[in-house]
Length: 151
Ligand code: HEC
Image 1 (cartoon, protein in one colour):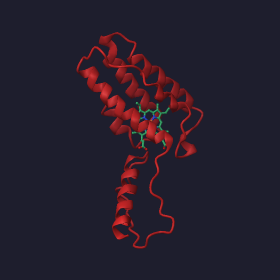
Image 2: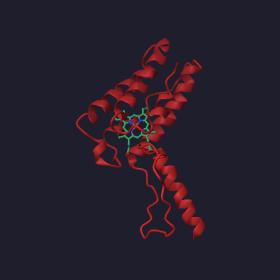
Image 3: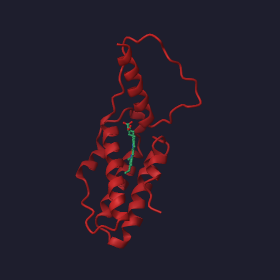
Image 4: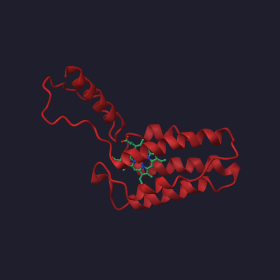
């Protein structure tokens, strides 16, 4: 029981680290000694799962582009879920969201259609499209997203 509780804390903290908000390192963290009645283990939303997939898949794509591979695969149709996937909280969805989502789709698709020597530049346009939507909405992952940029 006790170790289960510890495990849930670890899972919850790991979940928080991945979420939009920066982990509040400056704030005091209070540890409750009693197990709260409804102890919810962090459940990532459909959009969070999609985003993790987008990050992973673009990390792989980045390696292929850097390695100058001929075949970098195709646009992943699963990314189209960005227009409809359920979010953790509705305040991350506003009037500008569909515009950012459409722009991202166009940038990501273009990586697979531009001339080989334009791929790096186009890939960095994708990174900018990710960051643009994240600004003012979900700033936590931005440093990790920016690491994708190809210098
Ligand atoms: C149109 C807006 C938009 C675009 C474009 C976008 N994101 Fe996101 N991203 C979000 C929102 C909103 C969330 C929060 C999801 C939630 O809380 O349900 C998020 C969450 C994330 C997360 C955290 C997921 C988690 O574990 O909770 C990562 C990582 C991420 N995005 C990476 C990316 C990457 C990489 C790209 C580009 C390849 C990208 N995003 C493009 C809106 C966007």
